[in-house]
Length: 178
Image (cartoon, rainbow, N blue to C red; front, side, top):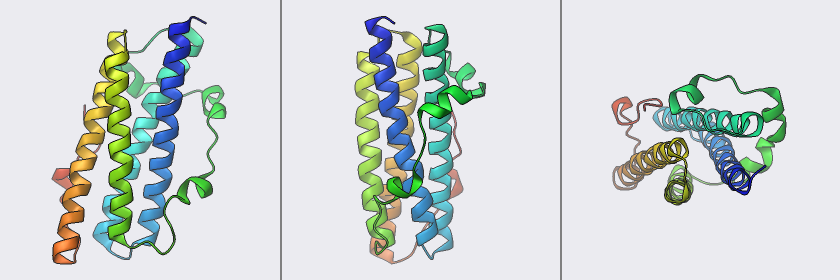
C-alpha cells in the first residue's frame, strides 16, 4: 500500500476507536441515568455514533480492498464486511469504564463534552490534511456532527445545572442528517 493509504487507514482507525468509545460511553450513560429524557438523549447520541462507525468502517474497507475513497452517500449505504468488523472488536466493558458508576448526569455530560471536543478537533485536523476530496468531505461531515453534538450536550448540561431537570427536544438532535 502507498504511504498515503497507510496514513488514511491510520486516521480512519483513530476515528473508529473514538466512535467506539463514544458509543460505549453513551450506552453506559443511558443505562445509568434515571431520567427518561436523559436516557433518550444518550440513546440518540449512541445511535449517531453507530452511524459514524458505519461510515468510517465502510471507508476503511474500501481503502483496504479497492484502494479508493467512497462517496459519502455510497459509504452510508454500504454494508460493512466481516473482515473489517473483525479488525475492530469491541470490549464495551473497558470502553464504558470511561464513565464511573457513581457519575451523575452532570458528570456524564461533562465527560461527553470532552469526547465531542476531541472528535471535532481530530476530524477538523483530518479534513485539513486530506488530499482526497471524498476524505475531506467525510471528515468535514463528521466534524460538523461532533460540533452539533457538543452544542446539544452543552445546552443540556447548562439546563440540567441551572434548572435541575433534563430538557431534550427531538428537533435539536435529528438522527444522522447529511
